[in-house]
Image (cartoon, rainbow, N blue to C red; front, side, top):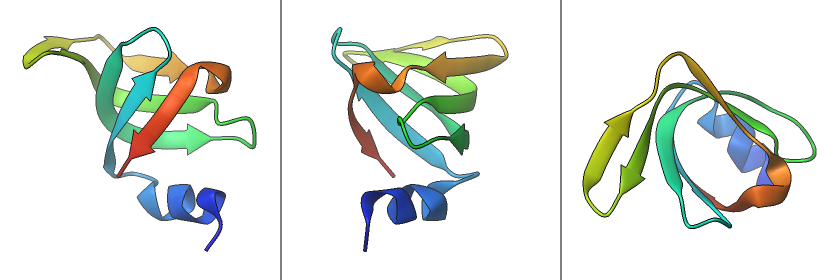
Length: 70
């Protein structure tokens, strides 16, 4: 199975995304592209068990993604 196939299976499901800056986001994966740019809806920032809701849609640039956990 290829990594993008796993992301395809995770579409419209909640995922956890960690970024190079040490920030983590949890939300519903609405879209992605071959560069791993991600569109999350109902996203919230997770910081050491403190959850900060974010309004609307969140875009995470692919070059900052460390991992994506379905």
